[in-house]
Amino acid sequence: YYVCQGDKALAGRWNSAMGLSGMGFGLAGIYFFGAVAKRYGKRPAMEAVLAAAAAAFIGDWWFYNPEYPFLQLLASGLVAFTGAGFWTIYGSILADVMDHDELECGQRREGSFSACQSWMSKAGMALGSGASGWILQFTGFNSQVPVQSDNIVLVMRVLMSGVPVVGLVISLILILRLPLDQKIMGDIRTKLEGRRGTV
Image 1 (cartoon, rainbow, N blue to C red):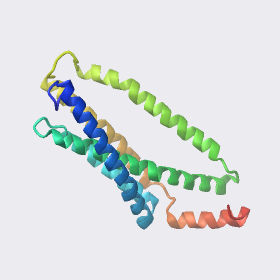
Image 2: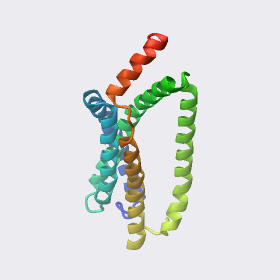
Image 3: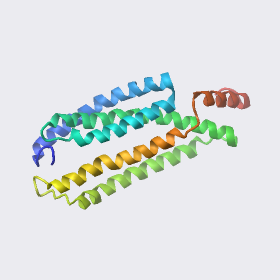
Image 4: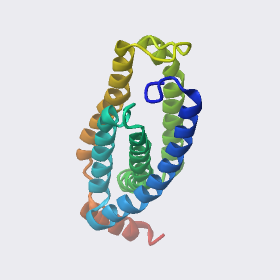
């Protein structure tokens, strides 16, 4: 509505292009952040993912621009780039947490961790999808009007960039506090293998 000025046919074509952009950038994100993790470790790679994602959402303020509609390709692409990096590294960090938990409590509890992670992801997606309609209503968005007022567009842009950035900054603060670096994980692995043998 904003970039295409209410032209739904044009918006549909741009959505298709943005989907392809997301696919290409997403594949690149897997390789890029995987290489960062191999070279510097998982935690620094996750820090890079979260910082890059925050920068991408801040960039959305300029990427959604009616004068330069092609910048939408960067908006979707950079979110996919960092999203793919996140999910690539996240599972590996979760495995480290499971190893640490096993060392501390003597039990291997992948099922419990996976169930909690799955439930939280699904609950988050459901809340996000469910809240999107209320958020649009809150902004005053009217789908019957081809061009929204400047006030409505401003509120939408603030929410679209601001809310994810706040969440990402909180996540970055939390990951900076994670003590499980490569050296500690090497020690944990040695202790676990000494206790129960190699797996």
